[in-house]
Length: 197
Ligand code: GRF
Image 1 (cartoon, helix red, strand yellow):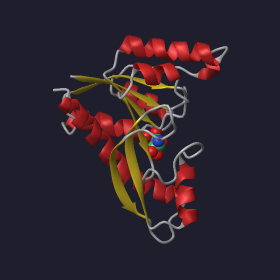
Image 2 (cartoon, protein in one colour):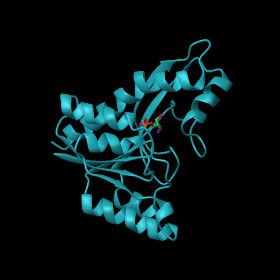
Image 3 (cartoon, protein in one colour):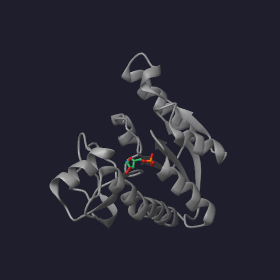
Image 4 (cartoon, protein in one colour):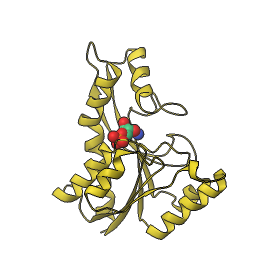
C-alpha cells in the first residue's frame, strides 16, 4: 500500500481528483493518510473532512519563525510517515531537510509544460497569463519530482492542452486542470503505487 500525504493551499481540485481516483479504482494500492495545508481557509481541507481524511493546518503564520514552522511541518510528516508526498497547489517553500529526507518521494503538479512558464514566481493564474502573453498555441501540465530547485526536478508526465482564441487566464486555467492536471496527477500516483506493489 502506498501511503500518501497531499499538501495543499487552495481549492483542492487536484486533491479531489486524487480522492476520486482512489475511490473509483483509477489509483490502485494507495491510501491518503493525511492532507496538510498552510491555509486554514483552504477549501481543500473541507474536501479532506468530507472524505474522512485527516486534515491539518500548519501555517508559517502560527510560528514565531521559519525554523519553528519547518520543525512542526517535518514532525507532522514524520508522524504520518508517507511513502509519497504530493504537492497539489502547495504555495510554501519546502524545508531543505524535507527534500533530503524524502528524496525522490515528493512530486508536484505544475500548470505548464516545463521548462516553459515555470520557476520562481510562476504559480496559479500567473502561469496562464504569461502563456497567453507569449501567444503559445499549446500549453498543458507537468508532474515532476521535487528537488532543491523550483520546478526543476525530473519530469514524470506531461499532457498538452490547446490554447483557444479569446481564452482568458481563468478559462485557460480551468481547461488545463480539466484536460491535463486532473488526469496526469492521479495517473502518476497510480504508476508509483503499482511500482511499490
Ligand atoms: C493548480 O492549478 C496546480 O497546477 C497549481 O496550483 C493549482 C492548485 O489548484 N500547482 P487546486 O488547489 O488543486 O484546485
